[in-house]
Amino acid sequence: MELIITPTQALVPLSVLFLVYHAIRALFFGKPESKHWEELPVVGLQKGWFEWVWATLKSIRKTQDWAFEGYRKV
Image (cartoon, rainbow, N blue to C red; front, side, top):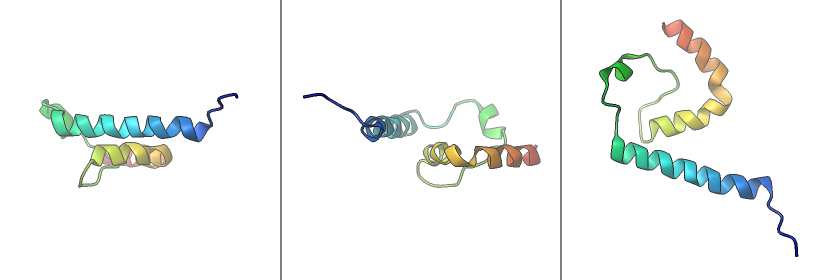
């Protein structure tokens, strides 16, 4: 019997690992200590739980829009 792994079967564990990593990072490490990072204009973030996680996931489809929005903010 041959073991065949489909792309979906490979992506699900990677997605779960990605989400767990970001959750642990957000809960235990919090915000960056440097105020420099807080002063930079950021696009794509919305207030709420796991804002960076959601922005990272949405960046797959919205990178081009956010690039132009970032240039408008600067």
